[in-house]
Length: 164
Image (cartoon, rainbow, N blue to C red; front, side, top):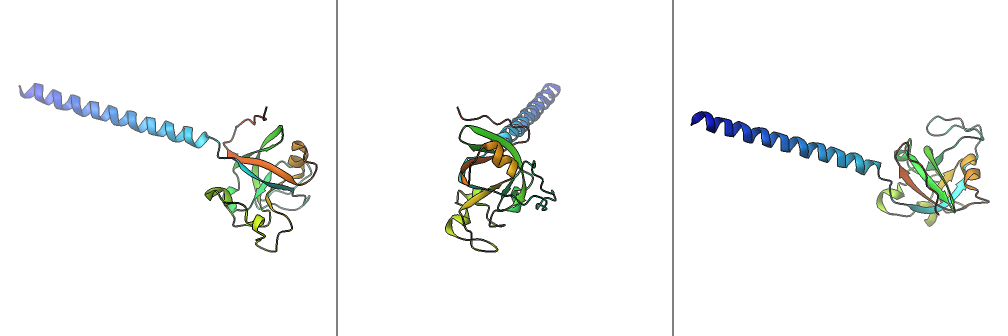
């Protein structure tokens, strides 16, 4: 009788342990899935960064063929973004901080870029840009001049799907 009760307790303990392991694995898989989901789209004015030969905030010396963007907060550095303009789209890293501001993580709280309200860190903005595009990204997307683009954070290895 005592052996049977002991076996039952051990069986229940094993069952609890297995259920706990399944729950932990499911939670981990959900977190991975959630982290790989693209962020919400941001619709902002984009400008061409230019600055060939200059150094970005991440240490890159800008070349004419450098593919990157700049967002106005250091927390974005190193992350990947998908940028869309009309039917074209690219996925590139954030390698610089700007335009106009260095402390404006507008995407984190559903705000608009501070430059749209005429606020800049070093000087008053002359346009409402919320993202800077390297010359190569600007050309790849086919922007004729500063214009509104859509962008969002994506995971590394994400493949851009143009709008159909």
